[in-house]
Image 1 (cartoon, helix red, strand yellow):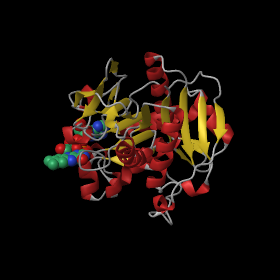
Image 2 (tube, rainbow, N blue to C red):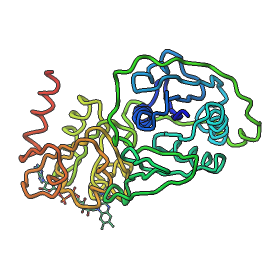
Image 3 (cartoon, protein in one colour):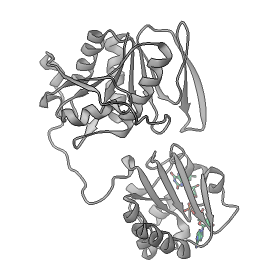
Length: 321
Ligand code: FAD
């Protein structure tokens, strides 16, 4: 009885969130004494890249190397994964919580008559079923969900599990599947891709500025730091409301929800509505001149001081490394 992990890829690389899902699958498989973790990848990507999923814990990667299975054919992905789930005799499917993951998982749950639990943050307690801990209310609380269905789908929250990196390369096995044509009825025929900047929702590092930055003319300091870190830039809601920054950069409950490895908040007070968009970040660094700013309570590292002094020094120090 294998644990199957559905992995996503973009621009020739397996997504980090999917590698986290593989590591989760590996730990689950060890807990269940379930044998090797099998990952499944669909569409065009190199075997050498897929073999790296082994570092995260996959013993084998089944690759359906069919260009028709490019992103956007969600129904076809669900059909392909369902076929492989049966083929390998899996009872549990693990995947990353993401837009594509959500869409595929919902369809798979119907196809496999499986229980689907999303936003999973820990390994389940196992017995006759699973007791799964998941994050709810934008990370403010946890719920324990008891799953008794034979087939189970667990969508793992970004940054919730440690990424394993020391496994040997996985065996990659290419297979062909027959997927009925009606699964390709909906397709994305063209996409516009922003270039030259890191996209906020997917960014691994975000540098965000608030009203403490005083005005749009000072945003060069945020951008300089972001450039050195390879980060996306974000802002608080009032900043985009006033028009200092575009609305698509507004982070929070009513804006973009981010889950980077590192979130740097500069001159942002840390109102609950802002925190709702950032509390899935792995590490939070806060720069604020007010030691009582609420954001410090959510911070892993805090610098009390004037952003206009700290930002240039920080950027220079990173540049010098
Ligand atoms: P302020 O609260 O004005 O804080 C500025 C901070 O900068 C202060 O902490 C200050 O000490 C610090 N500072 C000033 N000068 C310096 C300096 N030189 N160096 C360093 N620090 C300095 N907000 C969001 O961000 N996202 C949301 O999605 C969102 N949704 C909302 C939804 C609702 C229904 C409501 C009612 C509000 C929402 N808000 C949201 C607004 C939120 O409540 C706060 O008002 C907002 O986040 C405050 O933005 P700020 O921290 O940039 O500004």
